[in-house]
Length: 73
Image 1 (spheres, rainbow, N blue to C red):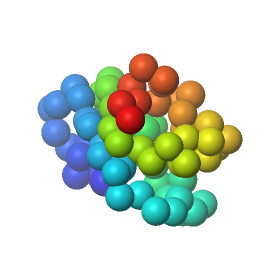
Image 2: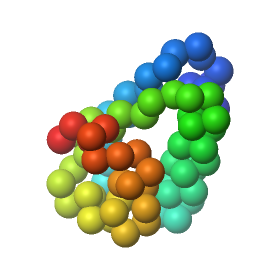
Image 3: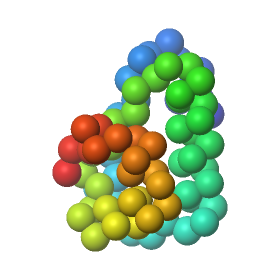
Image 4: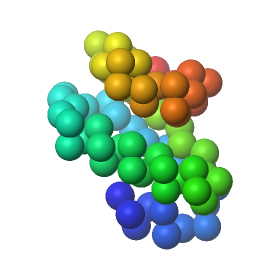
């Protein structure tokens, strides 16, 4: 994911339609990516997150960090 932050874009759209599991390593990687995007003032939008994964994103704080308005299911 670091290459995504090397762009001058102000918007990153992440399609998670085929996300099956999120382990601690995945959570940490996404959190680090969000830190980098925030530092570069990039907006992150998530599309097609499986509905059964929303609770996980809420529990680990990623949902609030990304922002409800930036999820398109």
